[in-house]
Image 1 (cartoon, rainbow, N blue to C red):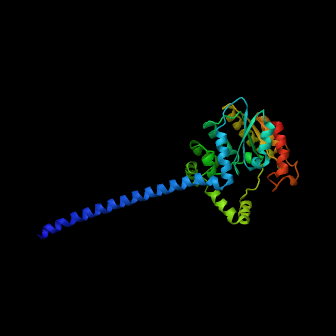
Image 2 (image 1 turned 90 degrees about the vertical axis):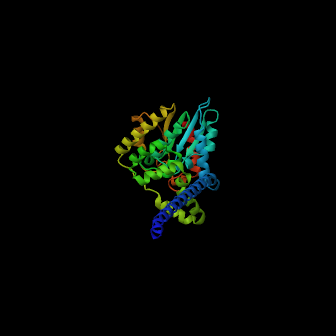
Image 3 (image 1 turned 45 degrees about the horizontal axis):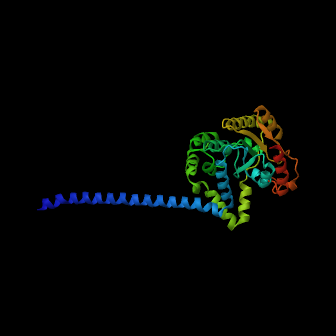
Length: 312
């Protein structure tokens, strides 16, 4: 009798252990499902709501769709890309009216972007079906030669997944930052988390947000003219060849501003057989035409837009 009871105890322990293991996997599966549903809901809410509460996100999202929808037609289409220098420097409605009947202008600027953002961004736009007749990249000389990117936000709107390993090597990202780019490629919530945080901060404490933006803004750095010329020539050639391979002309539009860079950029344009448009020379406009010493104000934008329309 004692032997029979003893032999049943290991059996009960085994059954109990299996039950606990089953409960563990069941709990884990439910947790994973709940987490997946939460993430999907958060992503869906971000994609639906972000553009409704943020004027900047709404503009970028709409401009992105418009750029992707460009197709060849009887009237040439000029795709204007760049950063905030283009966004604030060109009066888009006025440019459209100036080109009316001759060409159709489509803009797609994203703030804080630079050369690498748009080189890989053009790759993706062409790959996804955009067919502009001409591409005009507008930024400063410093933005053309730097090797920075906007980061996660560009991964969502501008980078192809297949290009991320190449981008990683280009800017020497570690595995943590690279995995962040991969995740951002698929998730607007993750890619736009900094923008969301800044949006909330601007609404709650605009003075503090403005101070943080000033502190975070990188200082302009210009190497010697020969180095500017070397880097710019190679990059302009890459952009021209990329556009040419998809049947589009390319031109670089130098935004008005202060400092060096114009002369070596012109030389780089000639060396790379690339159009470099300089409607207004650097250091030509007074400070009264800039709202912050960097971006044109309304009066400056009117002058710049008129000259850009003549060149185009």
